[in-house]
Image 1 (cartoon, rainbow, N blue to C red):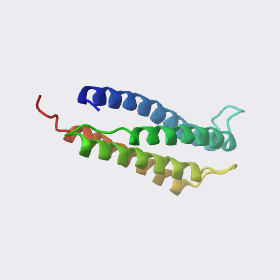
Image 2: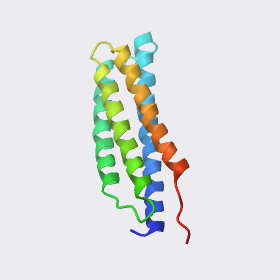
Image 3: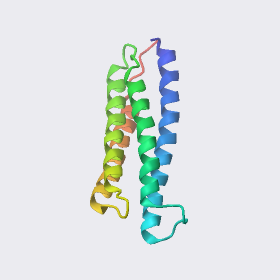
Length: 136
């Protein structure tokens, strides 16, 4: 893959990642609201768990697609870190999902999942900070 094509592909991946992160963040926010009783009548842990599960399936496909992208010379390390970070986010959101029960949530697992998600995102951010753009 050419460098320009790769950069364009990564930009598209980042746009999709931002959408997923927003969705997962909203689910976490809604879980907290449900627990406080500050929610719509249709919002429940069961419903959030269902919606969360469906989006994790989509996110999993997204991560698999990203992992299939072959990085051009000079971007291999960045690409590996990016994929590792995406896999870390996947693992974290699965932990968050596991914390959501039909009638309550496991706070410790929920918070641990949120922290793991932040750490995985920081790994991705760090990869961008460390990227070495090859000279043309």
